Length: 168
Length: 168
Image (tube, rainbow over all chains, first blue to last red; front, top):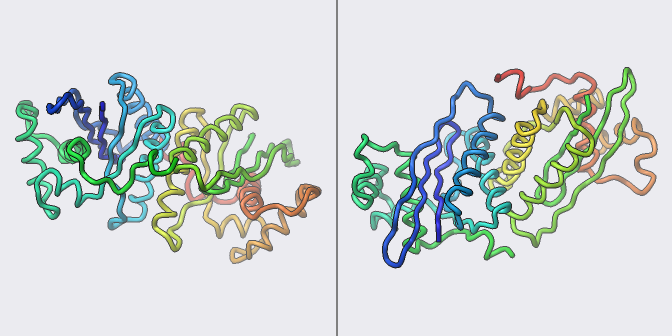
């Protein structure tokens, strides 16, 4: 399994690429891809597609992992994030990738042992597990959130949706 | 302007292709593209992308028109429809198409003269305008809704969003 986990955002999208080799988990790529707020939403959606299409091809990704969406304070934000999720569904279909979705609670539980863990606790565990990834400075929440989703998937968290297997 | 107007749906997507030639409006393609509910959402999103990508190339589309989204009874449905809208944003970016969004009220006002018109009234006006399009039987609401959005765009309805022009 070569896994790309993503925390989509219209300003910043955290991501990580992990490979499971026996009992080892190797992190080969990670970061936060920023999009200028001055670009149109169309341009950002199109750039988001291009960026992750390139990542999928570069790393021969086999699976995607994301969090299940939930309606937060803003319906408009929920809608825009869903545009980006739609792009990930499309890439999953075009590249024949499994797509796993996990609830935020399941991710926190898998990574910290506590379903109600704070963002800081999640980030601390991720940085502790992947020693040295913060050597160039603290990571953004978007990045540690994406890495937490990836660890959850590799560690066998219970997905709320496994898109291809359940539906085909 | 060669306009593709779409009423996205995860089971059925209505669409129309119209060309404005001077004062005439010519309807060159229309219908309702059905997706099986037995297919996974990934597959439907991917098929939706392929279908409208092909329409854009076939007709040399220059502009897209859709309705502005609103949160109806179901957050889940709103999310899934937003996946499809994200695909239209992507196609708009990839093919350099203008994308116009109109509120349902503006569409009804433009087509029937009444912002609070019923679906039936909208459908009746659309069928009256494009004489003969129902010769093979009554059209689905998804189709007449999409055609109404297209007429609104060609008749100069006030868009709530003009995606490229406003934001670039």
